[in-house]
Length: 377
Picture 1 (cartoon, rainbow, N blue to C red):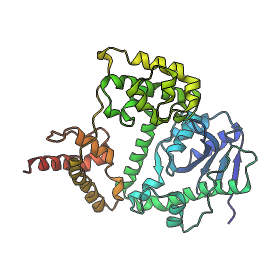
Picture 2: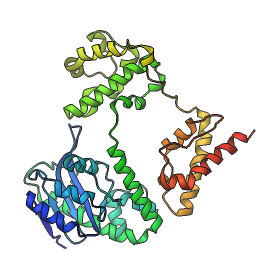
Picture 3: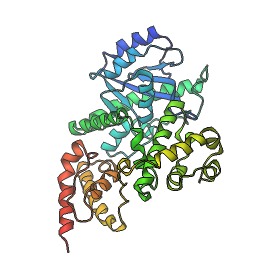
Picture 4: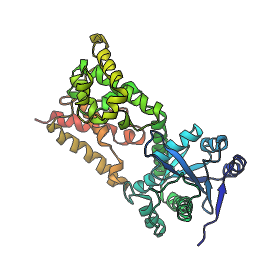
């Protein structure tokens, strides 16, 4: 069956169609982009589906995104996406806004226990019984004209995404539907919370092995890398490779020769930024102790694994009761933060990352479980 495709290549057409979409209960959204040598994704195509037609928006010929921004912010229109983290970045970059409310079909599939982290093709096969052709995801979406295969692929994505929503929505209870939207809102909130460059060091590999004085150097290196990646629009590893950060902070080289010998240090980095890095290391390595960051907590010891398994079992039992994919319940990182708040003897504190319905349904059970474990001989 041929798909009805509408091309949108100018500002006026986008404004006209966005006005029409504002009257709909939902729209399906997808994006195609390139992100090979850049920090930010470059939009190549935007797709909108209404369940009947596919609309293809050319971002290379449009420069007024205000109508789409208004649609994204219209809470009366549900925005349907699939595994949307990078799509959200594209939309934020183009419009300065993010969709609300957000319904992610990958999340919905997990809430219906169809599978966790399902790929789009597999979900379409599962829900609609349609075998999608092999994707064009690796093709050049910035080329013009787009190939017939690219156009067909993009249009099918938009059309079938809307059809998947129409099938999944009635199968979700009111609670589960609310939880899908809640998780969607959390995805949006996380993207809005732009990372503070001076907090990045906390997640650097092996940071916990460094002294507070060395962490002062790591903090500046990570902050500079993050800011330069954004300013130059380059991947972080093109600024300094990840594996070079820890040895830089630990050994603090004071000449270009020593800098070049750092593990995984790219010669290009030494040529372009070597002198600056030596100066940054010298300055941050000589700050007074009152300016040192707090120590990064060590990883949980091996004997915490038993407690971790015990906490995970609470989520699995709740998932079974609710018929939800167990991986959706309690993230390992959240459970580790809970244990780190009081290990080994407590008291424990629920981390901020345990929010919403998860906190309401399982928060007290998690704390009670840890109290019980602490009372055992």
